[in-house]
Length: 189
Length: 189
Image 1 (tube, each protein chain N blue to C red):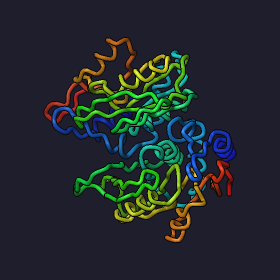
Image 2 (image 1 turned 120 degrees about the vertical axis):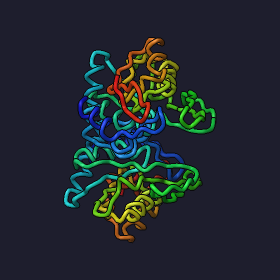
Image 3 (image 1 turned 30 degrees about the vertical axis):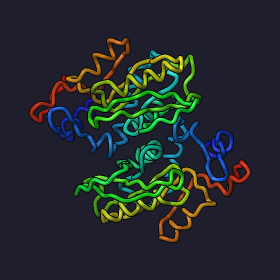
Image 4 (image 1 turned 180 degrees about the vertical axis):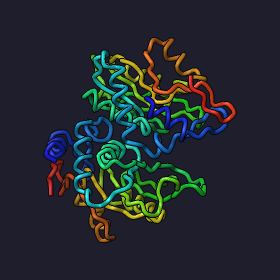
């Protein structure tokens, strides 16, 4: 994914020692050709996994997710984020703690879209502490379905997400792995 | 757009007299082939408008928006929704009243992504009262850019959005136009 690495190196803006702002091509303004290439790459990486659904989380996961789902010829589901709990029987709910925002949100998926027998590819824009990805995995498992793997656009490898997820048995494929953002400099793994 | 009309008629669920739930193919689970066809159709309809950017709003506009941007070979920007106002100089902000949720949200777009000279195609999943589309148009105009048109996936033609937007001079192209949801029955224009 040379195109993606070039974008990260040229347009990524480092804030502090651990935030990478990529709003010019990934999570506010988006380059559709880059999204299409990301979709092809995730589809290639997980081609052997008999994926039946792609699952992501609003909002920044939707563009890479829909492109991946298009190539795999399956549906995309995006989990919704919400602040407050209204328990209803027709949704799966999991909590996600955001270290950036220092708040807990809930994510929800309608029960009718995930079933036992589904093999679900989880796609997201960033992997840092693994909170979002593991909540999505818990929703898949609540449904009696199976996690086929996790496709991440940008992984901050200096944070514990990858280790936690791989130790839990998930296959994690990240298109860009960042070793460090210290001193305002992007260093790749 | 026979595929879209078939989906609306077969999978759309009418709630009350004015809500159409389409979460099985448009705004929770998404059919990527349908999104691709929507992208091609918007690109065809606005082919003569020299579009330089596609603008939508999170979350349900992102999938049709990215597919449209891909065909038009331009960037997609998605406006972010937020509850509270923190004024900063580097964003455009507009208010959007949601009749469904009975609350006012703000939507924001970074100033660096819209410039004078841009011709902006606004894409959204639904048109009802026109609140979101007109707020997006005000952001385009704040930037000194021009609205090239508005591409809507599903228009509730019995609500005033289309009239307000066309009276304001915008070209509105809706792929499905719903005349009525009365009595739980979907009637097309």
